[in-house]
Structure formats: structure tokens, C-alpha cells
Image (cartoon, rainbow, N blue to C red; front, side, top):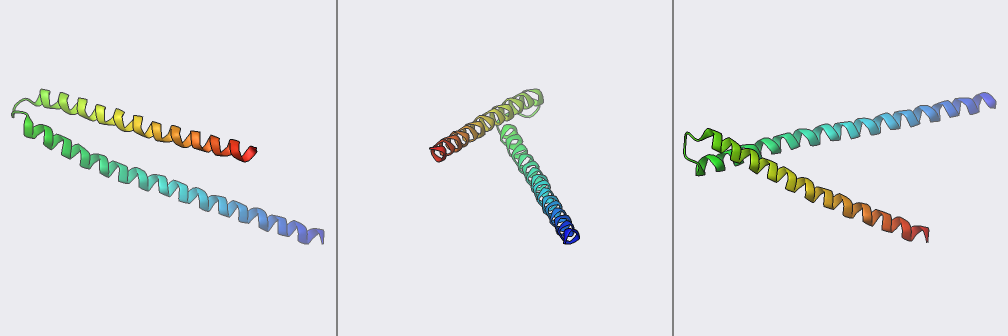
Amino acid sequence: MPKEKKEKKEISHRLRIARELRHQFIVTLSTLLTSAFGLVAALAWNELVKELINQYIAPGQTLVSKLIYAIAVTFLAVFASLQLGKLAAIDEIEKETKEEKEQK
């Protein structure tokens, strides 16, 4: 009997490891794909912003257009980061509130 228990424990341990590896693979693949699509989206927005700036600034003013582009992209990045930060904070507050209610 002890040998059978040991074998069952070993099999159970190996199954847990296999499940964890599968989980890590899925998480890593998900992160990579999300990053790839994020890069594609960023490149698409990059082209759009460049076109908009080039359309409204006279040709030959490359320094001015690059400055405007840098400011616009920085503004958009800060705005998006702040909005995502607010969402994360709201989510965290809701999670803490739920946990407090469950403890009572």
C-alpha cells in the first residue's frame, strides 16, 4: 500500500506541474499576442497622427511637425495612462469593498 500511495502522490504531483506549465504557456502566449496587437495598433495610430499633422502643416516644416507629433503622442499616452490608472483604481476599490463585505 505505501508504494501505491507514493506512486499516486507522484502522479498527482506531475499532473499539478503539467497544469501549471500549461497555465504559464497560455499566460505567456496571451501576453505575447496582446503585445503584438498593441504594437500593430500603435503603428496604425502613428501613421494616422503623422498624416493629420502633415495635412495641416506646410511642407518643409519638418522640425515643427515632429515637435507637434511628439507633443500629441505624449499627450495621448499620458491621457490613456491616466484613464487606465483610474479604471485600475476603481477595480481595486470594488475588490476591497467586496472582500470587506465577505468578511462580515
